[in-house]
Image (tube, rainbow over all chains, first blue to last red; front, side, top):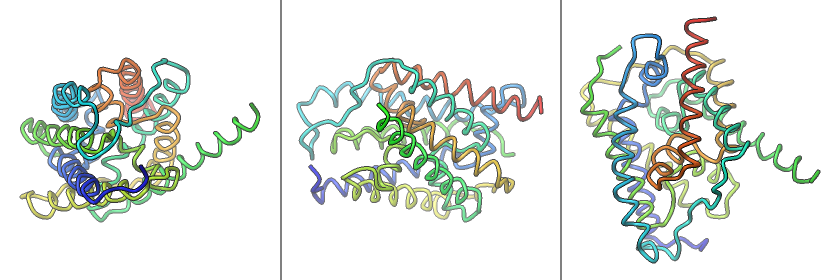
Length: 147
Length: 138
């Protein structure tokens, strides 16, 4: 599975381009838009609702058909999350993410595509994003060596 | 700030949804950006396609910003502390909770996952409370 075929690389590239184009077109790389959506007590900006609504309407309809297939067109298996439980890591992680999203106005996608604007905010955000992920790996190693 | 325009927002959302449908249908992978990014940094054996996807995201963003768009995206106020603190929390939180707006939002809701729905409700409301506190309380 580790050896990726060229056609799978092509799909990764096309999919990435569409994702970046979508984030640009929908203005999600403008963090003021995102903060405007999150600021329910200010002049509320509904943009993000239309973006998420548009994206989910496509995924809900298409995923039904895709996941009925035996396997993906260019792969052996579907790699899907297996966990079902609503547990503390899920909700705790969502709370921490939400606070960080509210503070910065960036979630990972717009943070990455925002690099193209050539300003410092996304650069700092991404370095710190990587540091937070590294810290989580450290936390994992610490807890797993104890247990 | 520019006025709200629902059409590009909806079109952008449809593109993002199509992107996730293509990645799942052809490669069998979930288009979750926090997972793709952290895997690309070295915590996954299959790093190469993740980097290709990330480069694609940058190309798509550049194509919009410097090709399609008639006006450039306004640059936001430089806020280093918000980036450093916010970025760290987003990084830690998305790994602990296994996903962000794309993985839990677009893909998880697309799979009708209750786990993802709970995550989306939690991070959206927490982010709204955070912005409320920062803008209207502090």
